[in-house]
Image (cartoon, rainbow over all chains, first blue to last red; front, top):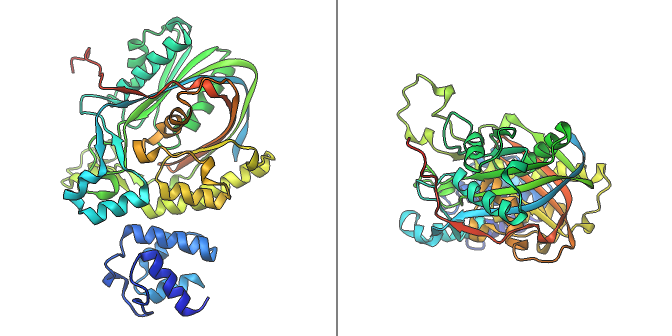
Length: 72
Length: 350
């Protein structure tokens, strides 16, 4: 999956405008980044990338890049 | 894994009672904002819930369910050998509410009665415990009562808990029956005890002056519970199916604890089972804690007359953390239609 595809996937999960996120975007500046978004992100990491759920890692993420790193 | 086959016990009837007062989650728009409420409803699936008034306790709902069930089955009170209540909202700190219900239901003094403190996993633990008691003691009939009035004392400003729970009480009649059997597993992960918790108000905080009122209210860590479900619970179910050579395609229904719709969908996805085999009641009744499995059965089968068996896998998971599953064939006609009641016990002077 390309970087752009990963960003678009995260935009879909967070229900934000397409192409609105960059690697350096701070999660706390995204209005939709709340407890529900954390759960949706855990589900996406599990479903799309087969990553075992680690809620602390998602909660501790500061930037969009931190989430992208969890996709690896 | 604690698992096995329990033989010679059958479910003869299931009744569920919910309060008459219905709450519409859309009405919370003034508290949390319309958009946030809609987002919550979309994720959890909870549109309406039945909520008890302050005077109506879990025991009152279980009492009505038990009464109706005994009437339908024509079970004389004196024929019931055991009554086990599983709740996290008992009438009193002391004594066990099961003793009060033994008295109210007019059961014999030869009846075993006690409470168990479990929530989401209550039904599965209850069926296993009650069945074991019947077989181990050579007894014949038992009532398993499972219910909660989770909305009592909930933090109305916490969107995670204020809009999720429904109240209710169930009664399940179990009887010795040669040739019937069911397969089960039970598990516990106490390291997650803080994930769903009321931290203050009991012995651990004895003698401490706690100013923060929220510590007396239920707190839930949504992401931890979600992670627990799609990892620990999912893996246990897979191991259970494998250990007992269970083909999931043979199942008619997967009745899961109605934690929230998002969890149900993700658990079904992980297990590769179609959602049309996963009945959903949370949309209308909310998360009814331990009652959610019998309530979902009543919701689906409450008007069935056919005695044709239905192959059901039931799985409860949550607070504790505690979870378990049961695979059994149940008679389609065992469930009474849903009962709506505002009755409560007035014979108490306290």
